[in-house]
Length: 219
Image 1 (tube, rainbow, N blue to C red):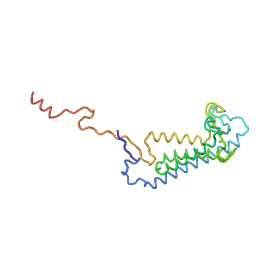
Image 2 (cartoon, one colour):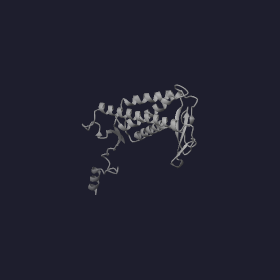
Image 3 (cartoon, rainbow, N blue to C red):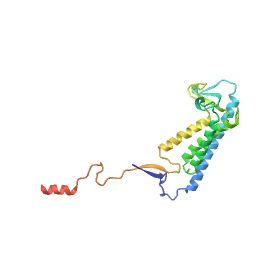
Image 4 (cartoon, rainbow, N blue to C red):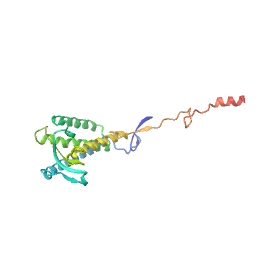
């Protein structure tokens, strides 16, 4: 089946009340930036609280042990991968930010704006640690504080709010792709296959009227 590109209001060009592309893009980019700023500020706030309340103390047990608050500083990625190459992560973050900027050029979808905003906010949150925290610029250690099912990250790597925003944004992007939602505000829908005039509704060949008439004449 072919794909048909539509907006939420219907096929492209069918709704005169739909916002102009320029206005739709401005709204989407505003949502993207607002989401990114909120995620970034929330990450900075939770890291500040973690440093103030969790330093030099035992992990805090929550929800019957499903969640622990454990302060740690991570020089690498998840599971402490590439901990000896901390300088790589700011470069990766710069590439991600550039990619989001390129995506924003065609952005007119609010769900995509939220997705990209979460990714951007999470990337900026951890980049802030890499730049401004010890031991130095671009090699700073990221502050993590949430551990699942174990106080010391034995079940799942200890993470922070920036990591959660990144993962949530990526998961949302995958769902949007799977449902055919495009960054420009359109949506791909499967177009029903046109019926073959030589077949019936069940794709069975129709009887040839001429041949049937000839058979009746011979009878």
